[in-house]
Amino acid sequence: MAANNVNIEEIVRQVLASMSGQAPASAPAAAGPIPKTSRVAVLSQLEKFEIKEYPIPEVGDDDILVKVEGCGICGTDAHEFRKDPFNLIPVALGHEGTGEIVKMGKNVKKDSAGKDLHIGDKVVTCMIFKDNPDITMFDLNKQNVGGADVYGLLPDDDIHLNGWFSDYIFIRKGSTVFNVSDLDLTSRILIEPCAVLVHAVERAKTTGILRFNSRVVVQGCGPIGLICIAVLRTMGIETIVAVDGNNKRLEMAKKMGASASVNFADHKGIEALTAAVEQCFGGHPADFGFQCTGSPAGHSNIYKFIRNGGGLCELGFFINAGDATINPHFDICSKELTMVGSWVYTLRDYATTFDFLKRAKGIGLPIDELVTHRFPLEQINEAMGVNLRQEGYKIAIVAG
Ligand SMILES: [Zn+2]
Image (cartoon, rainbow, N blue to C red; front, side, top):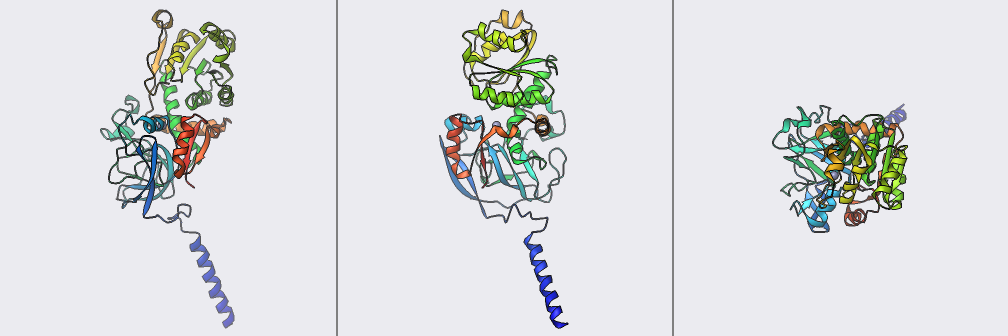
């Protein structure tokens, strides 16, 4: 009997050891222990990131510490990398990021949409409205991003953990945080660029011209144009013609839901190009156009593809690429064209985007293929090179 007691004690010890090895629910095993410092990729001069190590600050009652899992490189990051147009250097970049909550203050209970927040939840941040924090609760569509700050484009401060190109990010009180635990990592990395297109399509819908049975032309098949096609497809639009100068991108456009494509390099002159686009619509011009290139010639051309009484959404010019020539008589007045511009997104669009990503996957659009390259943090300069040479669609920095 004594021997049996010893065995039972041993078994209990083993069971307890194995249980503690699995870590209790309050400290997820995936995150591991929180280190004292975090690496941060700091753009310390033009065209050069340096990996710096900063202490992780004490998490206050309203703060959230997030272990970064991944962050996409945005066109905005590329502009900042090359020219510092926002005058932010030295800056911790990366705003298309996502990660796991590893620590949070006792006052943090809900995300910006009212969903519960717990340690272990996967989150993204959106804009921080200093002037009007209530924008998360009231009429969001009345304001765009003016007056807002974004993690990854904040001036450096004593905390330093301000961007998603890092091991940890320190989210402060008043920030916009969403619990997106029900989305996989690739989808979460794509939320920010997808929100730009959800917003553009919302802007387009305000014209009353874009409907489920519209003929739509999408010009430009970089990441923005490709996601535009996917968003249109998820709202039931079947007839989408993609226009670009690159056959590989046009193939991808078809995978994202385009019904036909036109390579502008195959058609000499605007008349021939217009005829090619109309041919894809069975001999009709488009009801609506989305201009997704940053090319002035692209802007000039798209009017020709659109019917009288049609609509246009211009969203390609994130930077000033110069003036475009149009003919106000033919392109606007006599055509009775309705045009909207679209710029970034609102918080409402952000929340809508979570469901767009689920719908897109649900109808079999290969959204994941938009993330073509993944680099560890220490290779961020190489990753930026791939991005600048446009060798892929979305380039992401991912945690090892
Ligand atoms: Zn972005």
